[in-house]
Length: 393
Image (cartoon, rainbow, N blue to C red; front, side, top):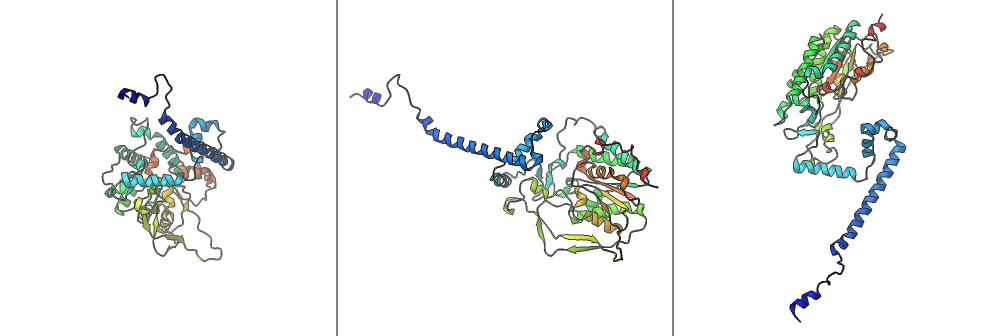
């Protein structure tokens, strides 16, 4: 038998159909993947239906929600498989440990020091070429509305703008930089306050002197920072009140220390992983500050003279109570956990007819980041249209 004939016996004859062996081998794998995808689709639809029945916010019948993209975000939150949270934690831990990456919202400066990305770089905007004074026109106009209305009513306005963590903790940046546009915005706001004749608190100087004034893994100030801020605000407010009040406060410390997982660790998806896979959380000794009851028969609380309308900073680290202790008065705190420019002040402003006539000072606290947010009062009735003087006799 020749070599040519032997080789021809191992091949199909010309014109005969060929069987694709590789394709046949992939069929079980394709069937398995298809089954997994089908199962995931069924689980996702079931999860979506369950959320729509139990959570009114997840209902998708609102056409405006579809136009704005909110409906798709609701679907993304609703469709969640049991192991998704674990996968996200593992992915975040590996991303940080291998690449040093903390996601799109968090940056690491010196080891263990985390910063909010928006405090370093302004959010992308089509208005980047507009001068700062023009871009902040709405904020300036809102400032004048509040200040003029309060001034007519004989109430002092004190503005406390909390500088961003990156502006204060410069020793911990280690190569990170704040965009110059943020500094321009900060200076423009302080200049606008001075031109409007509004009292303002130099929190940048007070917090810088108290460094470290912020938690390493959180955007908020720690106990040192909160106390420094309270002292600075009290020094600005006290002249409007006269003599210091006589309310006493107690300070109670819990035994031992505990780890405090900051909001920047949560934003990075590392709140629930072990310390070997994330920057170490802050350590603190919790304390509680509270006013001491007078012990009188009726034990009435003194009428509120100071109204504090601020952001989450005024709700953290006992700031409001520290401020009250420095003033010798309880502070009427209506602050909200919100980063908007004037959300808390706008909310209480709608109820200003019911404010006690004892109010003499309004403290408007906001974060530096809120300077780029729209004013809440702008969407409601004009401040000037409803003067507060109608409530005072």
